Length: 138
Figure 1 (cartoon, rainbow, N blue to C red):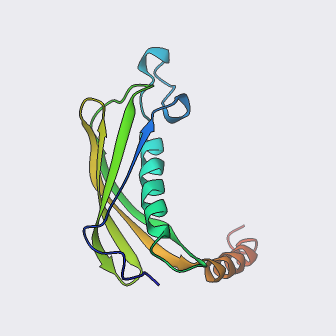
Figure 2 (tube, rainbow, N blue to C red):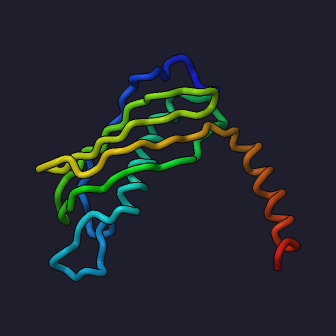
């Protein structure tokens, strides 16, 4: 259950360095810039970590939607500040506005939604699906 401490307008943020593991490699060493999939992962992690203080023990959250535009190249070694603001809470669904800035400019904007789950119930559903997966479509 989402606690009353989480409200629309709550802000979470993190500053991190774009290390080699967060960069693309397919354009060569001179163009090692922040990879969009890594950016999405970092955004999700900020939202997840922020939510953990506002949900019950035995719960966690899973991402359900990501809608971003990645508009700037952040170079290897630069820092980024990922800021997320809670814009909507509907039952167990939480939506965030996203703003990401590197040392020079804004490089990303968008939204992300997460759904709060009971971990044991989710494990049970996943195990049930896995047991059926061997017989479906194979």
